[in-house]
Image (cartoon, rainbow, N blue to C red; front, side):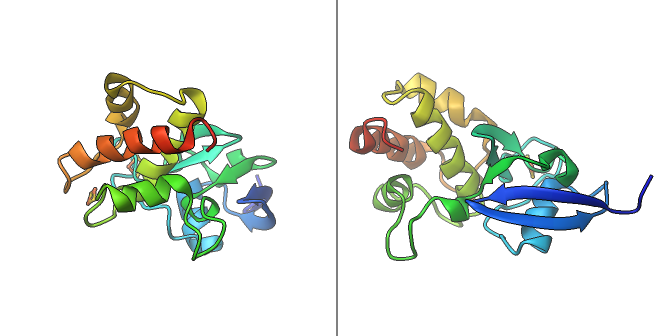
Length: 161
Ligand code: FES
Ligand code: FES
């Protein structure tokens, strides 16, 4: 088996080619190889949701995937949400407006999970919001304002996320 495998992956619309060790996790690839440190790493075993990204438009815990498994895929990280630094994605804006974050450690995972939820269910109930976010742990907020932010995001975006 070679020491390094060539991975070609499109991240936030840009193609990257890197030779990586087969054991390299996708979260470490994003953070250390590509410098996309918006994807956070908490538990490193699939529990906290901080590392959540979209892989081919499906939610994925990037700590539970090897970078080589993303070969040929499209990955979206939190850096891919906003059009520019001055133009937040509507889901980012509502988290700001509704005070849906404190320290921000969980926030990138919350945002990605919210985008996936609203693409699937443009008008989720509170129960569906809570179920969707149940795999994303937050140590700060008590979740009330996060749920409020997702509700507001649904109202503002009406499925256009
Ligand atoms: S770091 Fe991946 S789920 Fe916690
Ligand atoms: S805002 Fe601090 S962990 Fe959620």
